[in-house]
Amino acid sequence: MYVALFLLLQTVLGANILHIAPVGAGSHHIWNRALAFGLMNKGHNITMLSHSAEKEKFKNFHIILLEDYFDKALELFTADSVQTNKFLDVKAVYDFSLFSCDHDLATQGLKTLMNYPRDFKFDLIIIDITIEQCLYPLIERFKNPPVVAVTPFLLPPVLSHLFGNPLQAAYMPYYNTKHTDRMSFLERITNFFLIHFEILYRKYIGIPAESKLAKKHFGENIQSFDEVEKNISILISNYDPILSFPLALPPNIIPAGGLHIEPVKPLPNDLKTIVDNAKEGLIIFTLGSYLRSDQMSISKRTAILNAFAKLPQTIFWKFESEIDDLPKNVIVRKWLPQNDILGSPKTKLLITHGGALSTQEAMYHGIPVIAIPFNTDQHSNAGKLASRNMAKILNYEDITTDSFYSAITEILNNPMYSRNIKQLSQRYKDRPEHPLKKAVFWVEYVLRHGSANFLNLASRDMDTYQAASYDVILALLMGLYLLYSLISFIFTSCKFMYLRVYP
Ligand SMILES: *[C@@H]1O[C@H](CO)[C@@H](O)[C@H](O)[C@H]1NC(C)=O
Ligand SMILES: *[C@@H]1O[C@H](CO)[C@@H](O)[C@H](O)[C@H]1NC(C)=O
Image (tube, rainbow, N blue to C red; front, side):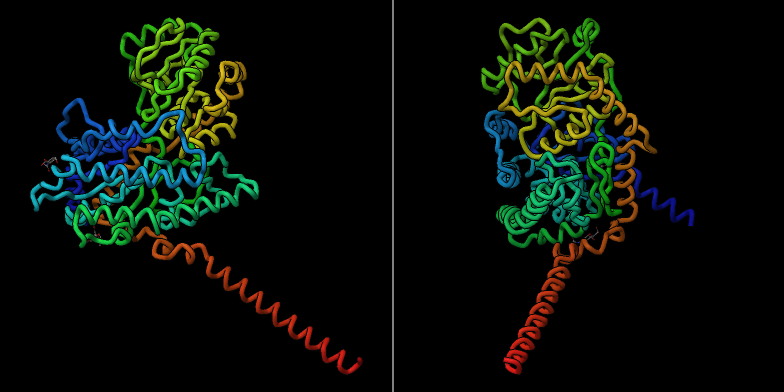
């Protein structure tokens, strides 16, 4: 028996893993890369398909670059052109996916992977399934090894549902709303519609469109996407019950929220000097990897700079070009080591677009937030913090010197915000193991056992209407209606006979 266990462990040492991480967003790359590094450090060999290049070379981490993506993609989004309709916002995600597929399927990078020797063996495939289902045929190309799905996009209801999770529409706020887990009746109606809208949109429009593109590229005979999805073992998600709202999860969804957050590293010398000299503390302002601060309208930029100029704090602004006449206390950089600055005891506030990774880092370090959400999950990330009094939300359209300045001073002068988020930080850090360790464990678990379909809830094999008992509710309502019709028929007949007998 020990020998068997030993052999089982042997096969797991140094597995060859293909990590398909095509979602075109810097944050997705950061999260996937953190997971890949966790696996590399356990001796596995990772080949990652990604849009982001790597400066350094590693022995067991190889990027196959889906080249030239960001030049095209970044043009699609600017701070001043953002979708505000919630339903169109859902559609926009699927359109974005098709746009990315169109690009990726034509890349040299994908050709490189497809041209691997026919008998080249990957022991396991990890795939970021948030979008770009068009790459599913890669799984078949490498002979259907066990597959682990991941999503850095917290836990979108549609993906959790794909793994058999009940919908929890009454208390699982949809990602592009500011709802909390305690919704009013009207909010629950919106939430219900948004969740079901996406499930139907994905099933009848999103997936068929992806599949059509894939067939054009990989051939008509590819495995059906339904089958491929049913066969994925587990979903490792960037969800955490403390960073997000508590939810029920089936055993095949592994919550590993915040796995990307690394220990704080010393700052580069130039930044260290600035931080050391910041007597009144620090503020960080960044809109993440997608929205370029330098594409904001000049009037917004001026309003923001005027507000900063009135403050005694030192402000780091992630800004992609130069600014003339910068106030003395504002430092702009194209790139900032955000996690390391957040870890400084001098940091008092993070001003952010409300991306999942940034807000998680703020919660980890206990730094209060001003969120300026633009699209998708940024709304719920912002809403979650604001409803717990750890943040204030500002609408981008409403930014003026006064509104910006007063939001900042409110957070800096009212200790409630900082106290609340520091308490959450302590609760999050109090845990049996680091989420990265947990995620690595579960990847190796699937390697050892070949699959994890024995963890599935039976609902994973049901249609939505069956899993949610809509058919039962409908049958009951119809039964009630029949009963009502029968009773009123008897009643009218009796009345009729009574009137006949006693006119
Ligand atoms: C590790 O991955 C690289 C890149 O895919 C591949 O060329 C190499 O053969 C792999 N090494 C092993 C030992 O499988
Ligand atoms: C499902 O996964 C198993 C185990 O990895 C594999 O043997 C099988 O071929 C896969 N089937 C399909 C339809 O992908």
